[in-house]
Image 1 (tube, rainbow, N blue to C red):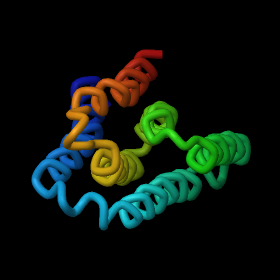
Image 2 (tube, rainbow, N blue to C red):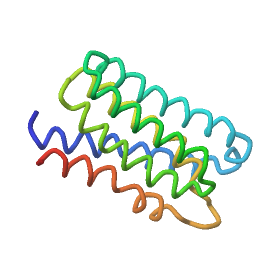
Image 3 (cartoon, rainbow, N blue to C red):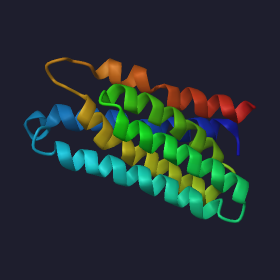
Image 4 (cartoon, rainbow, N blue to C red):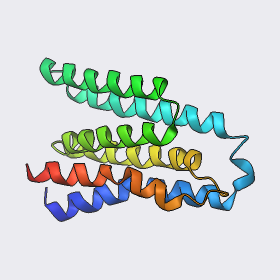
Amino acid sequence: MQFINYFFASVVSFSGLVVGMLLAKIAPEEQKPLEKYFDFARKTLLLAIFIFLAFYFFSNYASLLVLLGYFAFVMLIEFKLKDVFKKTIVTYTVLGILFFLSSKNMNLFVIESSLVMLYGIPTASLLCKRKDKNHYKVLLYNIGFVIIANLLFFL
């Protein structure tokens, strides 16, 4: 895969956060009632990301164990940390690594990149607060996804 295609795929996957921020800006009155559904959607999409990767790495047991370690780490962070910003920083960094791992198989790459984009929508909807005007903070804290994913491409 060429770098330019890979780079734009990572940016499009990251754009789920922008879509989620637009959703929060368009309908701020719906944020509070839908908060538990957004949280459920985040956790379900995160599980789907790891399930698709596990199906791909199922034949290679060492890679599967590393993947399960990543999953356990992310789930531990999801349930132990109370600060949502810290959760997303760690989660998006791990997703950048998983994004790179999925780039070896084109079918898996398409699935994973679209799931990462879908994961960003409820995440940004939970993070964006209209009173705080923290839109730039959401993007800046999670830019590690794009940086990690693109740095790993060159290693």
